[in-house]
Length: 161
Image (cartoon, rainbow, N blue to C red; front, side):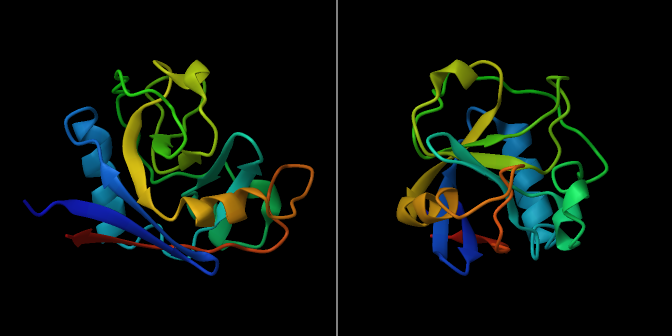
């Protein structure tokens, strides 16, 4: 049966992930809508923490003003959909602020099992191809704010396979 997947193209290679539609339908719809509106195109992975995760999806990262990176969103938030999917390596989850219902557009990919995130962040996808690309991104030289020194831009498309 054909299913939709997300394809994240970067200069270091492509990352593909399947959606956990049954576990986080609102988050999946939000991500697909943003991707289909080309919201993510030209944004960067602005936070990389080796042994933990890579984060992207902030529209402020289209600007060179690094002080604003990590503070932007799509102008709306979505209600948390905490689920029983463990934050194991390859899980795609939504970033948020202190408020559980504050996720918007920023997402992260876990590079090492991080079950302490379970029940606190909404897992909505799972990488099926390209974890070696995620590993390259997470090991990029970075500044004191964990922002890679080189811009790692993304183009996100939704494809049916």
